[in-house]
Length: 282
Image (cartoon, rainbow, N blue to C red; front, side, top):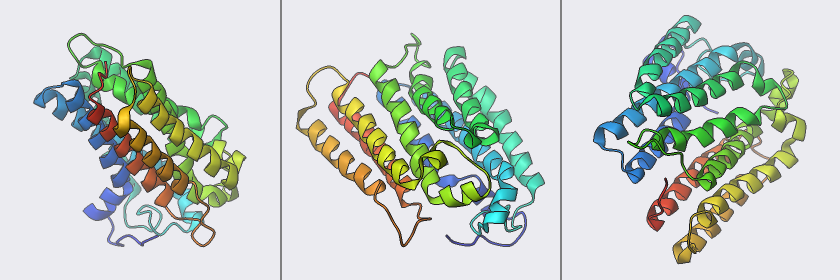
């Protein structure tokens, strides 16, 4: 893990505390989905800004809540833990992002806005409480399932996405939770955090991550009407390979973030396959 700049309050430190990689990835995937379902330019922009503001709020609040644990664990990649960012700055940024997220979400309509705000609330509940319990997987499942709902509920007739897409989102969320926690399991247990992956242990968490990620891809390939076709089967095979690699043990680098980065790549692959098939998403 790379150390962050030590200059207190620097823009770089504030950006790093926001968990920029997942924030940009989730916002980009949501925006691509909005384009696919026919949201206009303004609608796609609203989706991008709403999801990004929600992700920023979740990222900054996560590091604020975990700052003492990160200090004890010696996390040099955490700006708050190394003193590169003042807690008051992170708190102000999180509150500002939350304040922006509400109107940006509701700008897509009450139904869509409610779906997205519930998803953000689920993520915040994970940060505050549920990450320490056996139910730590539930906020991820709910938030990822509601992301396509936010996109489609903003259309004129406010449709829900098909059940297979909701299921795929939930499964992808559980897989993302497992791969995200894998590098920190030992440090979490030392700090008294006993979430779902910590209770399973590293080996079983890797196996379950591979299964849930593959199941999400299978739902996207096999759930829509009609046969998957060559592109669908090829994509499913590629997804299986990515899921397997993400779950491989890494005894020399147990704190590697590669499994989570591969999960993001798998999400992008799943979405690309969905768009290539031209499947109706509503």
